[in-house]
Every structure is written in structure tokens, then in C-alpha cells.
Length: 297
Image (tube, rainbow, N blue to C red; front, side, top):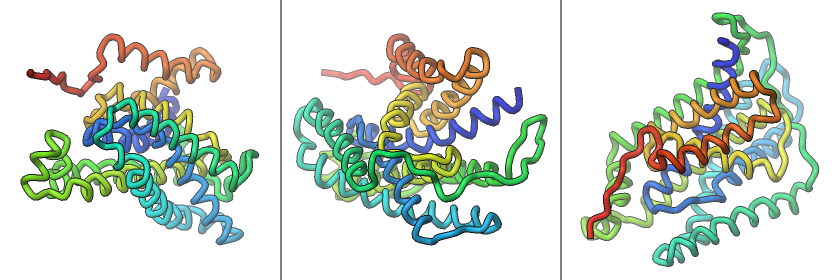
């Protein structure tokens, strides 16, 4: 039981990191950025390229190097997210939402098949794996590397929550989410704040990509498609647009998959995720912590 909980929390932390970018962008400009999962894929490949350039890595240096690569990858994917917003989304900000949604799907395909053209269609084996001696904690077998990475994920999520709730930048984001036009009249640089929101969300997705590459050991150009849908599911479970709710949704989705695959088999993993998505969209579309919004005419 403890092992299932640990496995669920570990994988759920990946989902939560990716889902936070979804939730931030939706919360601010009401855009379902379906290319967000591909920034996770881009992060995994950026980490793969940096680790490959470094060359052979001893097991003793694997974890420190992985953390350094994770930071570098966050910068790369953050800038990629800013470029995506500037090129694909900003020109259409006043267009109907359907146009933005179609653009997001097109941007997703562009990233996926752009990476396929550069890196090839075959899966790549990640240069660094999370291995080493495992410890037994309350009946669960846990490696030191797993503990460090989940600690990094928790720190990133806590840092984002502090950014949004306790800083001037976070207040600007929340003001734009409420009313972008009035925010601009009050002196807030709306375009700059939205760009920085894309940077932060994309950087978190890139960090999750590196962590997943090191955990699963294999990456490919389509890996962002499924994680993007699951991150969307996690955001819907917690309440899309709600930062603590999105974190909770990611962890709950990880736990659901862990227990579900143990009881019914691994082939049911995706069925659980998308079954829960349909259930929440039908019964409680605002999620567990989302607030019902009433539009007044």
C-alpha cells in the first residue's frame, strides 16, 4: 500500500508540474494551450541534448548533473513558451476562442513533427537514469534520486504558489485574469505579464520533461501528447485556473493511476485518467477547488 502511494505521488508530481502551466495560461487569458504538453517533450529532448554534449557521466555525479541540466532546460523551454505566445497566440488574442484553440492544436503538431524532423522518429534512451540503492521507508522502496526529484517538484510548486499569491507579479497576473482592459488602464503591462506567465509555466513543463526522461529512461517526439491530455485532466480535477487545486489534481491523478493499475492491470491506466476527466466534466466541471463563476448581463 505504501509503495502504491509513493509511486502515485511521484508520477503525480510530474502531472502537477505540467498541469500548472495549463492552469496558469487558462486562468489569465482563458486559452486551453494544447501545445503545452509538447513543451514537456521539448524539455525532455533539451535535457537529452545537454547530457549528450557533456558525455559520459559517473553514477556519483549523475544527480548533481541532472539538477544542473534541469535548470538549464527550464530556461530553454521557458523561452520557447514565450516565443510560442508571441508568434502564435498574441496576434489572435482578440479573435474568437475557437481560432485560438485551433491555433494551439496546430502549434502542438508543429512542435511534435518539428522535433521528429530534427531528432528522428525512433525513441531515444536517456543518458542518465534514476537508479542506485533503494531505501525502505514505511514499507516502500525509495531511491535517494527519487526523493530529491520529488523534493524539487514540491519546491517548484511551492515557489509558484508564492509567486502568484505573495508578489507584485502575482497580483498583476490575478488582476489581468479578472479584467485585462482595466489592468492596462491601471498601468500594468499586460503583454509583459502574460509573456512571463508563459515563461514560468513552460519552464515547469520542461523540468517535468527532464525528470520523466530520467525516470522512464526513454523519450520520443510524441511523449507530450498523452501527458498534455493527462495534465489537462489533472487541471480539471483540481479546478482549472486554481493553482493549489491543480497541484491537488495532479497528485490525485497519479494516485488513481497507481492504485488502478495495481488492481486491474497497466492496460487500464489511461482508461482511469480519461474516465475521471469525463466524470468531472459531466458532474463537476469546476473541479474540486474551482469556483463557480456567474456571468451577469
